[in-house]
Structures are given as structure tokens and as C-alpha cells.
Image (cartoon, rainbow, N blue to C red; front, top):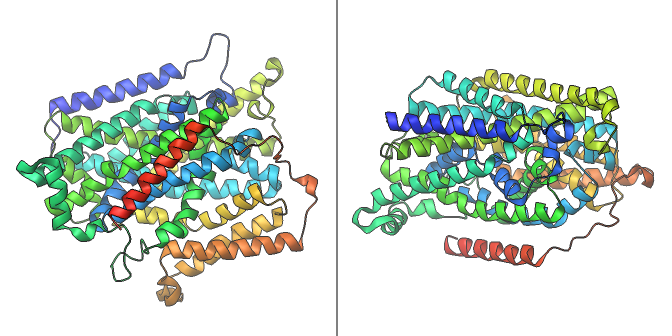
Length: 543
């Protein structure tokens, strides 16, 4: 596979265009210097289309396109549960979580924990998230992205890795969240269009004269085991996706943590003009999630027929791109780069947000524009400029660390997507516990929440610790999705028990439910029913 002159022109035009657009939307109004609200929350003025597109652009990156397509090659359509169950999760987030967050003017997830429980857990969880974002998420995005760029463009992988990281950094460095969110509609349009092209051409090649529909039928006939949504215990990949648990077990825990309590995802909704606007964005994202397996997983399954002897599953998507003619190859490659850049930039911005507002500002005792709203410009100007400067420095440092650590952490793995799920699963049960208790049980205390968070990591480690190093073979054999369910229940029981044993004064809870309404608009309700009906149909067809 080799990029032609036309392909290179399209990729360069994309890079120049998206960079220029990001800088244009980042410009300051005359006489107004960028403050923390502008930089970290896009002035709390995002429209629904930007929220929905940005949620998907932040989520769909190399670990989804390359990694999930690789899992489609190895496992099959069952891996699509991560996408389809996310659509249902988004409905819960929009209906039950966002009304509380927006009513209480939450701007980061650690800030919510402080207002609900106390300052200690804010710092602990901020550090947890920074470690997870830098060493698991950010490294995986640029590593898998560099694999794709290397296979398509033929450049050295280290050069590709540094180039992607540097471009994503510079792309959002000036404007922060606004630069990311307001350009993501372009990124997502390119991603969807490019993904549909590659799915169309791969199925067309399999179908021959029968076309795309014939290709899909032929793919079903030739690899029927790759179209089982619910894997049986005798399936070699059952440990990755343990049957019915993907519908009623640990995947809910992972999805609630990711879509509801994950800073670099929920930050877009927290920056909405209003709750109604945020919920519209959530619905938009939900429908896009239903489409993602067609764009991501299907090419991986097609590669089982078209390229059955790949050295690693993660080579599936780049290999399918080799089928594209000049021009279309450049367009799809630009779409892949767009997804990588958008997600990397989103992650960098959220790392900078947490470090600046939850670590630096708290340590310095700084009251920010994000917290105080309209403040005296003369008194706060220098302080706000310094916060934006600190955020930019944090962004630079985070991407440098990720570039250095990507190869040592991910270089030897066949399916990096599973690595992300496995190690994110150490903290996600505890995160889900403390947020659900914090949102819906007034009796939860800071000591209880800390106990739940720490127990999640410790118990998960006991399950993961290899038998060859003295761990338990029985615990190692439990699928990690089931492990998350067990760890969630154990962490929940411990958090509740400690909260009951060590109650804290009720006035310590600064999160108010007064004025919070879980009623949603008719449009939200109708769209929600449509999403659920589609999900039921999909699982019924490929059960």
C-alpha cells in the first residue's frame, strides 16, 4: 500500500484545514483575554451538535478504529457490544446524571467528589485519573495511531507517533476545549464518511457481482462464528466477552464509569449552554454509537476473509485500507488521522483541566473563573492567565510522557483494545461505586468512598496477579468483565459498611438536589425509545 500524490494532497489539505479551523474558533474577542472558563469549558456555551460530535470524536480513536477492528478480526461482532451498550448508557447519563451535575455547576469530576464527600478524595481521584489518562489512554491512542500511519504511509513508527502527538498538542494548545469541540463536527463527519467507504468496498469485494448486500450475506456464510453477539463458554474468546454478562453484568459498570464519570467524555456535556442542549447532544451521540460497528468492526470481520493470515489482529483495519483506490485512500487515511487527532487532543485537554483545576489551583488556594463566574477582571486577570498557562504546560508534559512510554507499555501486545479495558477495569468498579453512592445515597461518606475506591484497585489486582508469580489460577481464570462485577459488589459493600460505621455531618454534603428534575423532553423520550428498540432488534437478530 502506498499513498499517491493525490492521497498526500488530500491528507495535507485536511491537516492544514483542521488546524486553521481550530485556530480560528480559538480566537479571543476584542478586549477579552482567555480565562479558565474559556479554556477548560469552552465558555460553557457549547451547542448540542458540538457536544454530540465531540463525545464521539473523543471516544472513537485509534484504540477503537484499529484496536476494535482488530478485535473484530479475532473475536467477531460480539466486540460491538462496547458500542451498542454505550448507546443505552448515554440515555442513563443524559436523564439521571447530567441534571445533578449541571444544577450544581460541576466542571470536573474530582470537584464533584470534593463537594459531595470532602477534599481528600478529590486529590486521590485526580491523581488516579491523571495516571490512567496518561499511561493507559493517551499512550494507547498515539501508539495504535502510529501503527496505522506506519502501515498506510510507510513512515517510521516512532516518527508517526511523535508527529501525531505533536500535531494534536498544537491543534488544541491555543483554544483548549473550544478548539476541540467546535471542530469535532468536521472530524466526525470525515470519520463516518471514511468508515462507510471502507466497509462498502470491503463488502463489495467479498460479494462480487452480488454487491454489498451479497457481500454481507457471504461474510455471514463463511465466518458464521464471527456473528455471534453472545459468546458461549466454549468460545476461545469467552474470557474477553463472557456471554450474557455483556448485557447484564460488568460492561454496565465500565460504561457508566466511562460515559458518566470520565472527565474527558463528560466535560463536553458540562460545557453545554443548558441541560436541554446537553441532553440533545447525548441523544445525537447515542445514534452515532449505533452506527460505529458498521464503520469499525465490520472491516475487521471482512479481513478474516480478505486477509486471513495477518501477523496481528490490530493490522486488520490498515490492511483493508489497501483495497482503496487513489483519492479514496487519502480520504479514509485523513479520516483515520482525524479520529486520532481529535481523541488525542481531547485527552490532552482533560489532563490539563484536571491537573490545573483539581491539583494546581487547589494547592495554591486559587478561586477560578470556572468556580466564581463573573469576577473582578482587574483582580483576577493575571491569576486566570496563569491558570491557562499552567494548563498548556501540563498538556505539553503529558504528551511527552505518553510518547516516551507508549512503546514500553504497548509494543508487545496483539490486541491493545483489550489492554485498555483490562487495566481501566482496575479503577472503574470503584469509580462507579463512589459516584453512584455520591449521587443517589445521602448516607455515603468520604471514608466510605475512599474505601470503595482503594478496594477496587486492591481486589482487582488480586484477580489479575499472575499465577506464575504466586497469584491464584482460579481468580486469573475469571473473565475481567465478570471480575468487574465482583469487584463492584465488594467495593460497594465495603463503602456502605464504612459509611454506616463512620457517618459524617449531613451539612458536609454540598451537592444539592433542590430544583433537580429528572423529567426529560418528549424529543429525548421518543429518541430514547427508538435507540432501545434498535438495540433489542440487533441483539435479537445476532443472538
